[in-house]
Image (cartoon, rainbow, N blue to C red; front, top):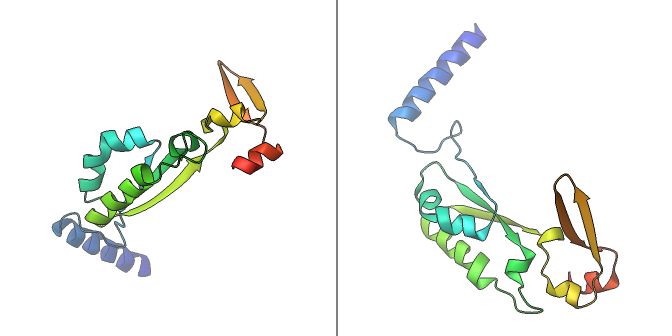
Length: 138
């Protein structure tokens, strides 16, 4: 009996939520798209920011995009711009910074040893994480 009542409750609340349009509720909390680069954000910006189903954005940044030269940080042009965009439309924003093969080339020019990892059909470059020079830059 409890299962039947609970099922009826879910059906009733779902039907009510559908009548209300796309408003968020405990049954439709919104989605958080995973956007894997600043260029993908630039391409899909209008779609994700205007969607009533998107609650937050999760964007991956490459270290090489955030610091293209030693000490030359591009935070305002990247993270800051997206913070302003999401705040303007009332959406949340989280991010990750990819390192490893997304590290800037200048770290290798400044003494960080390069480790090449091969597998399958590709070869990736990684910094040697135990290098004191890497820890200095990271």
